[in-house]
Structures are given as structure tokens and as C-alpha cells.
Image (cartoon, rainbow, N blue to C red):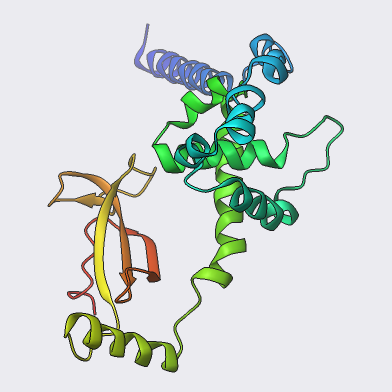
Length: 234
């Protein structure tokens, strides 16, 4: 075989290899075929899920345990559900999950540190649905509650906070106590080392918050890079 024929053969083999790799990549990207519309174990949600059983029982018979479960009383829970209703109401050909269930599951995760996956099992909801419910409810909580409970301080408010700090703690000219915390995360794709904290030796985002003299939050900022320094970048 002469040199020209060998070159043509190598090019053809490289081309075939590229085509095979491309087809393999396309196959990997294809969504897995649904085996069922609803996983069979989740059909028993109404009879065996936490919301209809444990949560419902705590709501009607044991308000002390209900408070430990949700970090609020029944009246506050109902009020919160009414506030979130405009943001969580769904229109679907299938019966949507009740707003109370969405809020109860989200509060369990936030208040008790339960994983979304664990809650999906106990509430008998699909894993992807549970993640979607949690994310949507958290966003609704912020949109509904932030204008009510975390308004931007006005000049008069800051003067009152400063006065409270002096009267309560003998600390003059202070309009807030500020602190932060690293929240561990999985490294977001294509971000390099932006979210890596050399101090914590892990990927994280920063949660910064300020409170007044009575321990009430007045300002929060969540999501800056793990290595972000407030004073170095001021």
C-alpha cells in the first residue's frame, strides 16, 4: 500500500471514529424513556403519605409537635399558605399537589434539615417533582415575605436601630451587626475556581446578614463567591 492510500485509509478511519463518538454522545443526551407516568409507590400518597397521616394528625391533635415540625403554629401555617397561594396555584390536566402539602414539605426541609430526596419518599412524590416543589416554594416564600418582613431600612429606621444599639448594648453609632457563613455547594459547571474557598477548602457560596439590636434580620445577601471578601472588594 502506497503512502497516498495509507493516508486516505487513516482519514476514513478517523472520520468513522468521529461519527461513532458523535452518535454515542447523542444517545447519552437522549432522555430516558418514561417507564410510567407516576411511580407505582406514589399512587398511595393519599393513604400512606406523610401529609395525609402524620402531618394531618399533628395539625388536629398535637399542636406542640406541629410547632416542632414546622416551626410555627397552625394559624401561622394557614396564614402562610394563603400568602403563597397566588404564587403556587397550578393549572394542570392532572390534580395538582395541594398548596398545604408543598408548604409542609418545604418547611420540613428548611426547619429540620431533611434532604429533598428523603422528603420525596416520605411524602410519596417523585424525586424531580420534589426538587421542583421545593425550589418553587422557596422562591414564592421570598417573593411573598420579603416586602413584608425584610424591607430596605429607611433613614428613620436606621436611626432607631442606632439608638437601640446604644440603649441596649452601649454601642454607639451602629446600624447593624453583620456576620457571614459559608454554605457548601457542588461546584457549578464551567465556573472554575470562582466558588472555591481556600479558607474552607471546599466549594461554597457566602451568606451575609445584618441584624438590629433585637436580633431581627434587617438585610441579607446570599450567593457571592466562596472566596469573596467584603472589605477587600469594597
